[in-house]
Image (cartoon, rainbow, N blue to C red; front, top):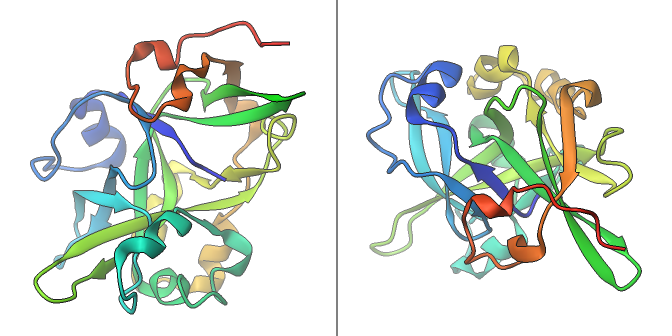
Length: 225
C-alpha cells in the first residue's frame, strides 16, 4: 500500500519535470509527511487538454457516495482490480491523474515494532504515482479527491512490504493522462518500478505521527532491533 509520502522539491523543478506552465492553483511548501485525508499535489488534464496542477483530497470519494466517510478506505486502489471495482471503474476509464511525490514511506515489522523506511529514486528527482480522481458534489459541496494505485513490490520493497505504489515512467505521463486512451493499454503501465533505479533506508519513528512534518522525517537512522 501507500500511506505516507513526501513532496519537497522546488516549484521550478516540478514545472520542469512535469511540463506544467502554471502552478498558481497549488500553494507550494515542502512536505515531509503527507498522510491520507490531507491534500496532495496532482496533475490533471483541463478542458483544453493541457496539464494543470491541482490540490486534491487524498482518499477517493466516488460520485455516488452518500458522505465522505468512504474516503479513508479508498486511499489506494489495487492495479489488478481497477476495471472491476465499482469505486474505481469509471475513474480508470476517464479520470486519471499524476500524484506528485519525491519519496514515500513503508514499515517493516521487526518483532513487536514497526521500522519505517524511506524510498526514493536514486537521482532524488520527483516522480508521479498513478492516480485516479473523482468529483463529489452533493448540495453545495464540491470536493475533488484522488486515490493512488498500488501493485506488487519490486526487489527494493519486497523485504519491507509486499505491495508498492505504481510509479509511472516519465515517458508514460502523457499516455496516463489522456482520457481517450484505452484501459487495456494503460493496464500495462501498472507495473513495479525498476528496482535498480530506487534506494531505501531506515528513518525515525517520528514519521508515525502524521502531524509531524519536518526534514528529520527523512533523515537516515539505524534500523531498530
